[in-house]
Image (cartoon, rainbow, N blue to C red; front, top):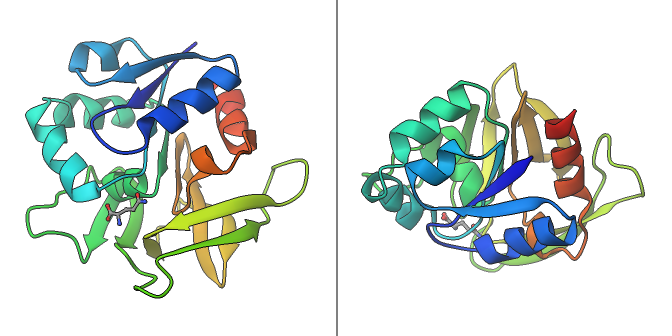
Length: 191
Ligand code: GLN
């Protein structure tokens, strides 16, 4: 199984390092040809407005939307979640998400004082106790479609969700020093 990391901008190296640590066959994805060769894709955190623009200039927007529509398993973290959502609030006027995850997401929802924080999260289906959630200029999920399952929440807000093979978090499992969420995702992909 080949696991790709969308490598247009942001924290893609950190995801790649997690995949390497898990012994996965990891590749960075910047072109439609690279996208066509993978079995799962991680969409990293970073700056969603920039990634949104690079999706167009790289020619990845159409094939990526089609691949996810055809069932490509994806895990989007933070800005990656914003790319997947059906609707983005407080985005740039030209910011057009892929619209594959039935959620409405508000960018930078935690405000300035709480730009970054950490919280231990109970995650459904994750063995081994709570997961250290690292939130950096995190978005909030403000609406959740009926087909979307909440795997973790914090302060009454969903922070890890799943719609079939589409997984997304408002926090950053790739910098938590804990491989279990990637591991759980890859296990499901392989199953
Ligand atoms: N605030 C960023 C955005 O809107 C996301 C933050 C992150 O990925 N750490 O793109």
